[in-house]
Length: 352
Image: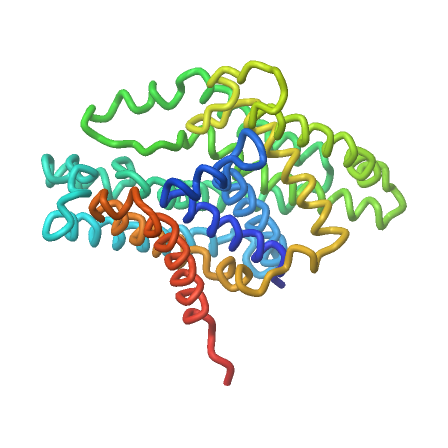
């Protein structure tokens, strides 16, 4: 059973990412508008969270979570078709974005092979490969989460993700990338850092499942602790919001703490507290964040996200006299969002 509010939130995140990727002037107001984090963190976290809910519901019929491997293969197909289509389009009639595929044009055989293996990922084509990797890893890890009977077991399963994230802050990705040719483009997202966001979402869903079960059995200690923490969470979020927008006289934190590439410590803490607040709202007032338009987009997130990549490339191929001037740099992003909604609507199964 799908939770409508979560689909709606995912749709909202897709809209925000789309508008962010179209650039200024809209992105000036939307990007990291709530603090030291962006919509991408929410999208990865929610994918892990919803994935764990699905794994729990499908655990009896599919204890090995083979559906995740099928989903990974489907995502890989979407990515490869999009990459090949855009690479050919750039070569044939979109020369303004041809430089993004230089690694493939200059090294056709090896560049294509590394692209198929998800090691070479041009700009804006680096997120779906992460989902493929996380889904494949999750197909082995999620069954362990679903069998966890105690909260401390969930914590132990989460610790490897924490360890990888810590290592990511100190150059693990660069060390691993050293085995590949220098011309490969690995994307802007550190997989060792971003897996922490994804698996933290999964761990949160698993931990809360056990906490609610304990509450039903008369042990409401964990649930009550989370509820009592809500005021402190709000205070922290307000502080980070004011700090990130320089409304208070504090120097901006060093890039180590707020890095988007590696998911810096302050960035993750700020985002995680924000998600805890959103979860509290969904629990208490589920209809408050249920929007029909974004709900349908959230249900077809793979189609919408893939289509948004194509639209962004078409926008980047547009002459600067249009891209950087009004009203086009406002009108076109809005029209793109409407087109993405129409795509999601068209993907809805028809009533018999």
